[in-house]
Image (tube, rainbow over all chains, first blue to last red; front, side):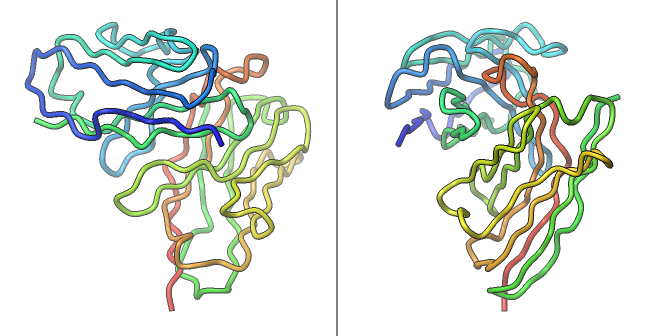
Length: 107
Length: 122
């Protein structure tokens, strides 16, 4: 089975920081990866699709990169509203997709 | 405006059944892939089931295969999830989600409902 490993699980940061979250796939998933943000009690929100494409309406401080088995989500100039949980998702085996374990970005 | 609205959650005993519904609006429902994703209390996201756009080909996570059934009501633009033989470990918030793009399935899920809570307990 295809596994997605996110790191770190927890990340302590401050406003204005540059933050990087990594997602590693156990096999080549090309660029078939998305990133989501989730705040407490809310549904996930699509941030990045196809590994590096910024979803409409998402601030440009969010960016994604990578292909194959290693991917990163970078948030530059972290804002108070960015403190949330972040998940990667592989769609190479669509419609059977997989989420990473999540990263909590906290103050 | 595109929106998804889940309903049908509740408290059920182990072994019982529930039928979740996801009412949709603002897009051509039958053309887009749809999915159910759940989140157990304090845990991460888990894909449960998905159905391709333009067809009825359904797929399931191993954890629910043989117990859950996804379906579309094409006349009412509603996505359903029939959940049978429920287990305590099925307790979660269940979200329905829409594919971002009807051609490029790897573009992720761009619209999500607010979620409906399923609690399986005796």
